[in-house]
Length: 178
Image (cartoon, rainbow, N blue to C red; front, side, top):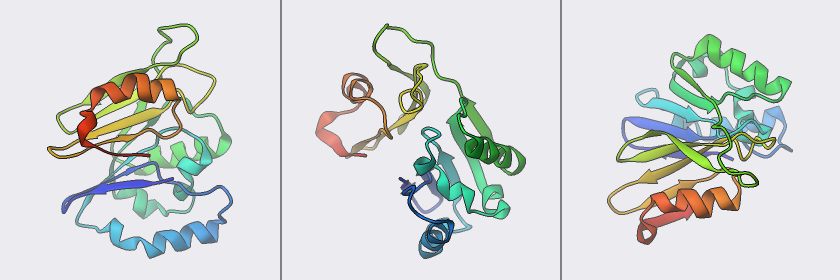
């Protein structure tokens, strides 16, 4: 799953993946068909919510030059699979600005919460609390504008979304939940 957010000068991807059933050739063809997104005049940023393959598998088929054009990438520090570890090594070798974000310690037994990591008037990036589930300990993003708000939730739990992140937005401006 991939969500792109852009204006004339900036492009950000929240996750960079697709179905686990797609072959590498299919992933490459999708990228070629969406090549206009990767305009060289835009600064490109990337947020990987968590290390399930369907959230980052486009990174398995991009070349090193693509990675060098990413101005910043944010991802959870807990890397659970060999494939994800290899991707992180490529990111470390080719991306200029990388932020590995640790999950927060658990605050309440039985429920996995979220904590804000980076925020300004346009967005808040959250990390989940430590959990055996990479979904719950991953990253979540809320976006704000004058007219709309969005929650980019990846695979977080209902508690994390509806009891916590939902409280950070103006509900009347809610655009879409992904």
